[in-house]
Image 1 (cartoon, helix red, strand yellow):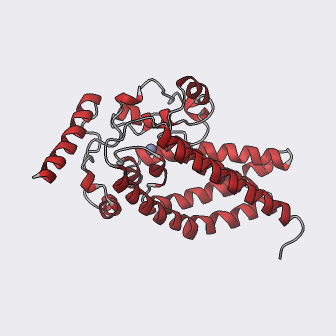
Image 2 (cartoon, protein in one colour):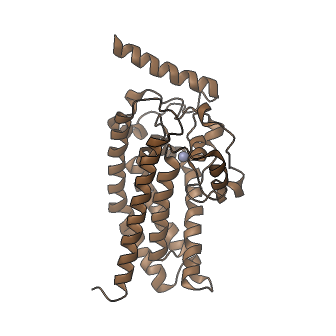
Image 3 (cartoon, helix red, strand yellow):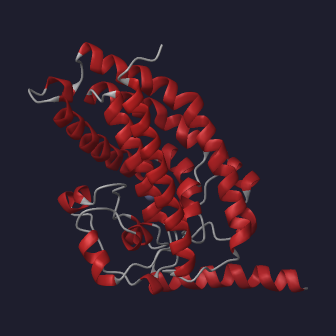
Length: 297
Ligand SMILES: [Zn+2]
């Protein structure tokens, strides 16, 4: 039953959701008006695939992840259990600590999704997109979401994340993921400054490069602090030089919805066999040209 304190809470939630909606709209308009990288393939087909994969992923989060994390967050706060709940500090400080630690442990999970072969099979579906824009932010295999749900539950329980901290982190994470995947060209100097604080589109563009040494950097998904601390921060690759994607998976006809859903369950190619810039660029060019020629015939 609703009580008095729920009313301001609900208002804050609606205001927060409206703010996120406006920010998301600004990102979508911004990346069209001021694109950072030139798209290598037609946009419509990719976008439809990404939205379909995104819908399945969101359904998985609401069916599997949220029913686990919500009760755990309520219990952590009520019982005072989990790391941040033991801090001798006011609630709002514990919430800030919880949001920061959620952000950091997502960094660690992201590294694991690249380094652990079973996890990479699923994360590959996100990385094999041939261009990078806001639609890539929701391009995930739904099993990727299902596998990360127990990890998310462990984060909430072990860190003692309260329901309020969980709401704040989720809103922040959604905004951040949309922003750093976007193809939004910010002024270089402004982005250099911003990248000291948060993950930016140029940073994440380097992480989506077809050159392995570049992909193995910029793992942060929120604050850039974790990359700075771990020495994995890079902003030294011009976006025009970057070929987006994974070298072994460059055929656009293999990257649609059905093939993407099947990809983790079929024999895997050596994803990074070609991993220097020129070779990746030439392979990308060759894959696109052979397809175009075949279509014209
Ligand atoms: Zn990644």
